Amino acid sequence: MSINADDIIDRRRLRKKVSFWRIATFVILGLALLAMIAFGLNKAGLSSASSDHIAKVKITGVITNDEPMLKLLKKLKEDDKVKAVILNVSSPGGSTVGGEAMFEAVRELAKAKPVTTTVGTLAASAGYMIASASDHIVARRSSIVGSIGVLFQYADASQLLDKIGVKVKAIKSSPMKAEPNPFNPASPESEAMIDRLIQDSYKWFVEIVADRRNMKEFEVLRLADGSIFTGSQSLENGLIDAIGGQEVAVKWLTTEKEISDKLEVIEHKPKRPTDSIFGNPAAIYKIAQILGLNLNNSEAKALEDALRERLPLDGLVSIWQGSR
Image (cartoon, rainbow, N blue to C red; front, side):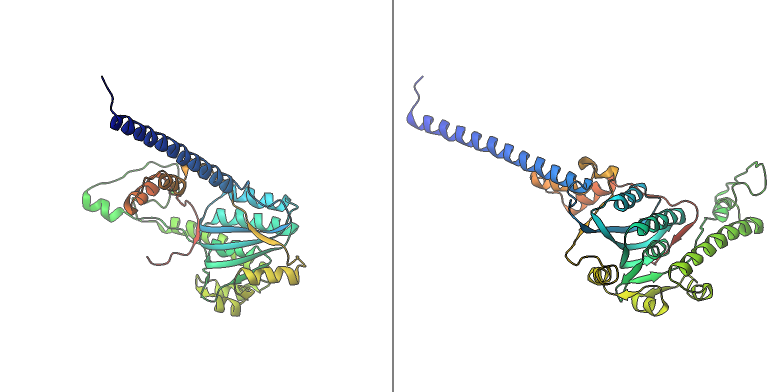
């Protein structure tokens, strides 16, 4: 069978196209791999500065008993390259236990080096508890600060059960076991028990603020009715020390704590299990983009929802719950 010139030219063109796409595929995979490695190193904190610097730590969202964050604060305390720490708090609060653990970790850190806090959108409840552990608090004029108090919530589904004809019975070792419960209205005794828990934790919270803010207990009690305040109001009430952002916090460190104004501010992040590349929705989405797989908003949201874990808050909580 004879092959004419046109066939030879077509075959050469086909070989060139195949070669091009092979090379392009390897390049894309290489870029994706580099992006994954860079992302992983950054999330793992392996790219942290090795020279003297000011560390910045973001504490955001609902406060839980966050072991990775506690380990990070301990690591910063022991790191001689970290000369001071800026906490950037933007949290409505969370579990009282989580706030207590973080408060104690910040106090331990502050024994070794200066610690200041900048408030973002809000530092309320346990979020403010953590901020008060630092030596100096800076907030924006419109930041939300305060909500000093403790909360215990439980559901009462007894009327709903009556309507649908369901009755839950229980045999208990004593009347206060597993009280209050959602199947029956709370008894006066169980409400009194919960109130004792609340008042004990509330008293402890008030004492913390009084001690850290150098205020009399009656002065704190005047503010500790659960109210929230703007940054400006908080400054007037003695809950913060200055209005501004990171620049103001750095200035305080350099003027009051004699920290060099030449030091760079570098963010440190806790190492979490979700920091693995394939367990992070943002990383997967970015890799999909690199590989030419464009996800629309609904697909990206579905991916994020599928991989995200909800963190329940059990027990006593110290959290500001704004209307949604």
